[in-house]
View: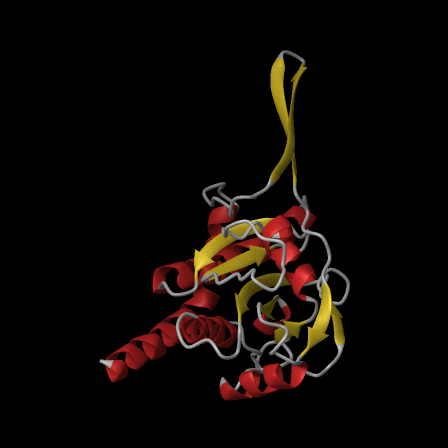
Amino acid sequence: MTEKRSNKKFFLGIAVAVLLPLSFYLVTNELSKGKVHMPLRYGIERTDTQNVGGKVKIDTEYHHVGDLTLINQFGQQVSLNKDLKSRILVIDFFFTTCTSTCPGLARSMKLLQTSFRKDPKKEASLDTIVQFISITVDPEHDSFQALRKYADRYDVNNDTWTFLTGDKKTIYNFARNELHITTGPGDGGAEDFIHSEQLVLLDRDRIVRGYYSGLNDTDVRKCADDIVLLNIERKHNKKK
C-alpha cells in the first residue's frame, strides 16, 4: 500500500510538471477570449455600492495580509512582504516532530516546488514566480537548525522553499487574523495549538486567493493551476 501511494504521488508530480507549460499557453489563449475565471479573492474589508450614470458600480476592498518577519532555516530574518514582495506565496503550517498530517503536507509542497522548478532552457523560469513558505507552529522546539534538518530530509531547494520559526504569538496571530486559517480561538499561549492541513495562496498584492487541502491531490493540482492563473493575471493587467 505504501509503495502504491508513493507511486501515485510520483506520477502526480510528473503530470503536474508536464502540464504546466501547456497550461500557460491554454490559459493565455482563453484569457484573451474572456473565458477564464481567476481565483477568488478572500477577506472582504468593505463593499461600497454607487450609482454611476444609472448603472450600479460595486467597489470592493479586500484584506491585504500584513507583513510577517521570522527566522529562516539559515538563521536569517525574512520578511514576507519585503524580501519576497515580487513573488506569489504558498504557505502552510507544520512542526518537525509531527508524524500525522505534516509529512503529507511536506510531500505536497515538494511536488509543487518540483512543478515550478528552474528550467535551464528558458530565460524566464517558473521558479521565479512563487515562493513556498512552511511556518512552524511549535517554535519553542523548532529552532532554525531543526528546520534546516527538516528541509534536508525532503531535499528541498532552499532558494524557493523557506522554513520559518520565531515568536509563537506572532505566528499564531498571523495564522488566525491575517490568513484566517480555520481553527478554534486562542491567544498563542502555552496551551494554544494550531494544526491545519491547509495550503494558503497569496498573490503579489498579498490578498488571499485560495485555500487548499495539502492532503488532497486534486486540491494540490488546483493550487498549481491557480499559481499559473495569478501569474498570467498580473501580466494581463499590465498590458491594459
